[in-house]
Image (cartoon, rainbow, N blue to C red; front, side, top):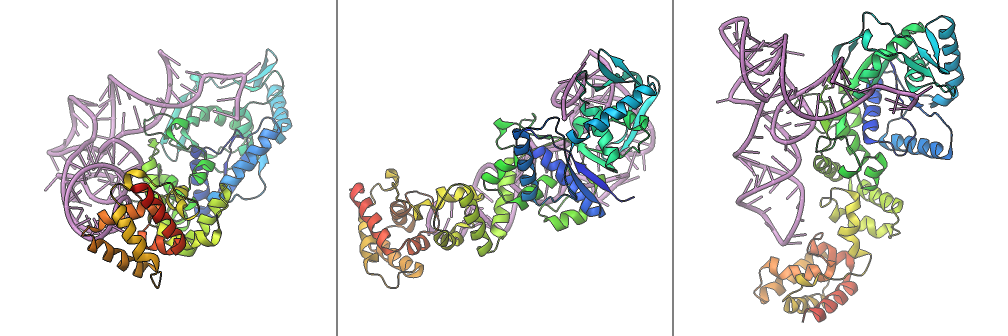
Length: 421
RNA sequence: GGCGCAUUCGUCUAGUGGCCUAGGACACCGCCCUCUCACGGCGGCGGCACGGGUUCGAAUCCCGUAUGCGCCUCCA
């Protein structure tokens, strides 16, 4: 039978990074097996908030490159079908009414077992299973009833989900058996925690896929990083693109123990992917990111400055702080100007009529000026850097000056010189 | 509390009885490169939760303890 899996997020706000990881595992498995990956929205009401959340979820999945097969479905659309099944169960004596609700009769002897692909054999004593409310007194089916039914109706062959559902599984298996459905294969993946071992939440940093996008992470970074949380192809490989991930992914190699989300490693990996981009592609992504985040900076200038920034930053969001001096006036950090007046004057003079005004010539001119003042390069260049870029940390000085142009450079040198003396 | 799951460097992990004086990566520390910051190169620090077994031999198998987490809702 062809593999068919699904991701079933509930439409509450942003797509959580943990859900995204689960989606990724499902997607990798489906693509590896040549199967289908479905998207099912587990909504219990329909509202504007839900519609927006669905857009968010789809946007995040698309951004990550996780394409789903067929149209997405809504749990809400199948409420009537769920109720019909409940009536049937009632008629067969497999369920009973209880204060207006309908409860499913769980077996009270023996055990419910399954062979979890990630965790091996799992067994629950049936005596510990409580009779599940399958339809509330207001007529709405419950999650633990609707979800397994939908898996049956959709022909889901493998349920790959977070291990917070392990305890729900025996209940769901009993529901499926009662309606004569085929029990899917289960694979419970470990959860993701913050660096303090607690559930990943706001105080750890970004938790929604959209937030990582805004922070300037690349989708290929997120996919690679997330894949490595609870899975590894071997002990060596860490950098893998989607194609390689699809080729090498297997559920058997998913680890059963939880993983902590290491933002530092994410930053490192994003830096690797950023540097790996061709200069044009890097510039393109920068321009897009800036546009999406409210910067109306000249795209052509962004593209020209991109190369000297590419290997300096690890997230696109660092660009404005790092290269903003190309686009707006600077307020030099006074502590970086201290005692720099002589060099600033010398620089102004050396660059005043320099031809050609390119990085190579600029470097030669400034080194010459430093030599005449008997200053070490790092001492000499710091005030110039601060005057030009406003900061002690910047892209290469000479290239920056070339791109900034003679006029702006000279006026910034003059302004800094005035405030330094 | 009941039930269940998990436990290899700070973190992600490799490891399925001898190849392990436990390998890789991130982080950290030091050195080199260097106009700052990065990048890059070299080196270092650092771990099998604990206690019993089984075995000629255990990170690997069994039992117990501890710790953490999840579920126990007419939430999803």
